[in-house]
Length: 219
Length: 219
DNA sequence: CGGCCTTTTGACAGCTACTGCCACTTCTGG
DNA sequence: CCAGAAGTGGCAGTAGCTGTCAAAAGGCCG
Image 1 (spheres, rainbow over the protein chains, first blue to last red):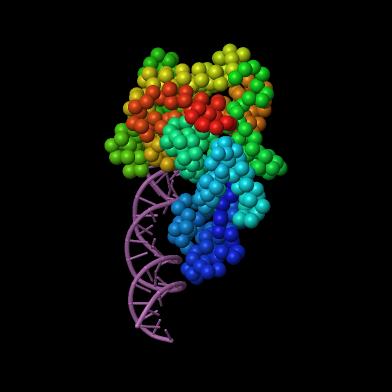
Image 2: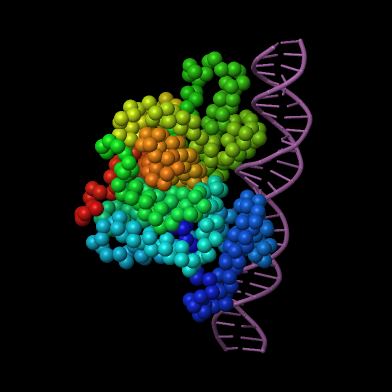
């Protein structure tokens, strides 16, 4: 779920200790590139920031930047979050209604993300702003959204006993991730004044019940 | 709605007659570029087909190709269909439930598209296949999908008396266009064996009622 | 510690999508 | 028919991205 959180590498915390020097360096480089990118983008905007500048600021070669991130947008988006979400979803009790499980997991994820444990709030806001403003980034976000959607399809399929590539399952999952995307964009467009978790919850209501309240006539 | 139909220029039919020579030429060039592109892509694949080849095959300069289509993906996707759909939606009786209007309009659109009036069936299939297979194309399709979504937001807002940028409205429209997208991809993945209109209808059911049928427990 | 193997890195060359810019041709309205 | 507008082609340049290859750095042995 690129939509709201990323970088599950927990900066310089406990888990990194026992790793080889190589691994640690890789993580540092990755973080350096990302940090440099965020800074440059905030200073001069997305398009004006070139890979070369990023490389220079991060003190690596352009080649290395491409090695870490296959596309420029990925520096901003990258997503180590799906597996966590998948595990969380599987951990929910099997008899819980699907939408309930989703709500719980998503709410937890958002809250954890917003707590700033993985990533600074500025970075989260910058990302959601870029998603709302820069077409290329939004585009890539949707791309990665569809990956998340596939993951969700598998789980929904397991839960409901349907096939993972069944049309209805696909449409449903697309609706869920799309809703989260819209929540994120809406959040950015309103200058992050709202509580993201609440926004997500509201969109999930729509996915679940349609656009019912407020509509005068029947359904 | 890039998802299923495009090119509302009706090749060489009646409407083109009274246009100036300039306009007619423009339409012809546009069509030539698109036809060349479709042919080349079918022969050698999307990535292997360069703008230069397209320009040569269409007997124009690369500059001209870019002038007509801002991005390569747009040659395959371009979308003169939204206005028609918007008009069709506005033409529905105001007291008809929203989802009904959408169903009618979308079904009509799909059927008209499938009739081959605007575009050959091969081209439609190629496009949906490219959407399913080439990430760049799918990505761009989602991009244009979100434009369609915005249009739909305006209409839904008018109909329901809500604000067009209200979160719920956005989420709903995203769900609808996303569903159509999934229908289109599903169609391509199953070698276009199904009836596209039926697939769309099934996804709209999901948008409207959630993933209810088949789920054992409560909602 | 020293040497060997693997991984990572940087530099370079190259391709392609895409963007101005300017001169030239082609249409259009008066 | 002729000014002015609109469309086209060619050219130079930028930036994202890919591949290759030799050099450097980390890891693992004896």
